Amino acid sequence: MDFALIEGNGRVTREIADYALTRLGVDHLGLDGADRRYLRLIAENYQGGPVGIETLSAALSESRDALEEVIEPFLLQQGLIQRTPRGRMLAQKAWTHLGLDAPKREADLFG
Image (cartoon, rainbow, N blue to C red; front, side):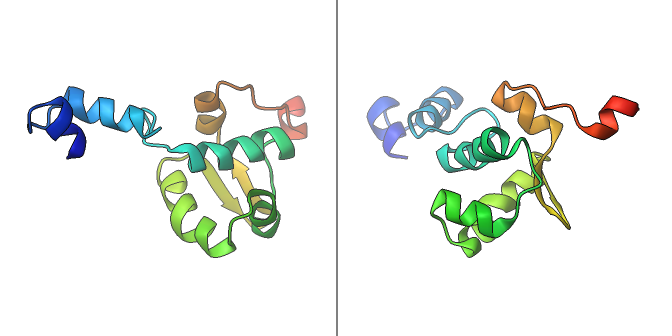
């Protein structure tokens, strides 16, 4: 609303909303800096996973609860990550959004 008051004479338009979200670091999928940091960590440090939640928590200096209750629900809803018995993994959509190529997996080599 502050952006609408200052930039749009009190009216909220699509342009004002897009401008405000961009200024706040929210991208076209609705991801903020913390979301992208989470995804990049899994991609760049753990080759897309699987990686355990405790490892992610330590690497990001975030509590497990914060990851499970704040960051992961939206990423799961958007189809960007998967929770598996072995840990968190990036879905193909996350690789695409990050502009990275997913590493080849053994199953991919034979199928």
